[in-house]
Every structure is written in structure tokens, then in C-alpha cells.
Length: 132
Image 1 (tube, rainbow, N blue to C red):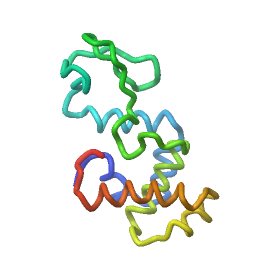
Image 2 (tube, rainbow, N blue to C red):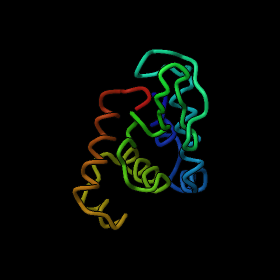
Image 3 (cartoon, one colour):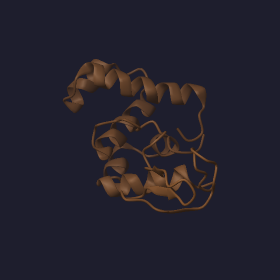
């Protein structure tokens, strides 16, 4: 397995906490993994880009559509701070059977929030999706 979720399998919780302590380090990792095979615009298929308005985003030079590093990943629409979401993913990858109630207590979040994010991560693991 490679891609975004590989780091959660091969790194322990403390390693994730140290390596991804800031939003910027998480975005940098997501951008690196998301576009490691090269950038292709999802809107028009063009492969040239420039820097976007937000950190680690890319803007197509043809259609001007901007795409963030989080877009179309397991963290898309996730309102948790990325360092916390990365810790969450690490726990779920090491223990897919953990209950959403346990996660809710640990992260001090609503149970349904934990259930939805856990569901996305587990589906990604089960389907063997490479990057997302």
C-alpha cells in the first residue's frame, strides 16, 4: 500500500504527532503524495499549473481552477485541524475495529463526526485506494 495512508500504517502515534505537528507539515505531505505522479487538472485535463492562493494549492494555467492539497482526499471536507485528523487516521489504521464512541471520547468530538471520518478511512483501507 502506498500513497497518503501508507504513513499511518508504518509510523507509530508519537511519530505522527512529531512529524505532523502543524497544519503546514500536513498540507506539505498531502501535496507531495497527491501530486507525486504529476499534476492534472480535474476540470480540463491540463497539466501545467502555478501556485494557488492557499498554501500548497495548485491553479491550472488553462482554466484557472484551483485545487487544494486536501481536495479529493480522505481529508476533503474534514473540519478537524489536519494534525488532529492525521492522529485520528493513525489510530484507525492501527486499530480499524476501534469504536467511534471511543474515538469521540479520546478526541472530544461528537460520535457521529468520528463515525463519518472513521468510515472514510476504513473504506479507503478496504478498497485499497492508492492515494485517498
